[in-house]
Image 1 (cartoon, rainbow, N blue to C red):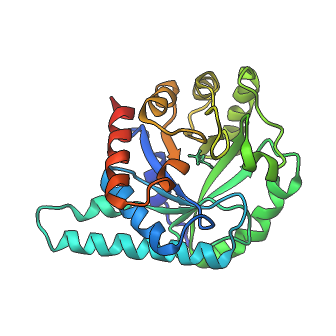
Image 2 (cartoon, rainbow, N blue to C red):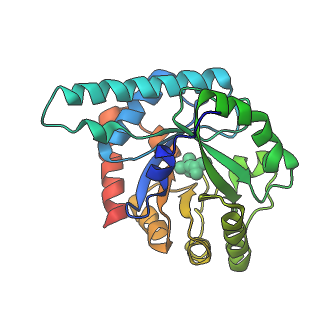
Length: 270
Ligand code: 1GP
């Protein structure tokens, strides 16, 4: 039996480094080449994790090609940095993490996977079946599992629909506290509070605060966050990681993306 490499989990759950920013790359939305360029721009701007996945339209083929392209692009800039004593090679070493729609959209080239239970799904498929279906592939490929409770909040978007989620409403402070506590009791290390990609309203800070007060887990928040000010509100409420998908994919020019994300991260942290 191969030992699980815990480096990605240590990176993601480091309590002394928050709040941090990560991008989400959806293989259904861009070519692998563009995904690689966006990943390099994001890491240059200060993003510290690359999530790869989407709620629909992904499969082994497009996920793998995208992950490989991102890994190669990051390795290339890391190598270039190592040749230039003015730049630090280790800054380019951020984990490329699968954030999969299911067991049929994986890549052995990923460093880690959000091994998640969609806790408020009404379907056993997202509670346990997809995880069982993918587990041996993950083990054989040596992808590091990040045990995570995925909780979808209103409006929920496509993730909520596809995942058949019984959405958490902004007023359901106690309900989110119960989910956060349950996630901790299950031994998960991370919870992801999701409003859905492109959500008009992000996860309410009251929900984030309630989750923060209820557990000692790493809290990831995403869905509908388009600017640093909104990210700061989520971070101040207790988020350790802020994810942006649409914002990242709205730039075709890598330099513009890098500038936009650098100011996003700056605003989030100040
Ligand atoms: C979706 O939380 C992510 O899973 C990102 O959402 O595309 O709205 O940034 P956005």
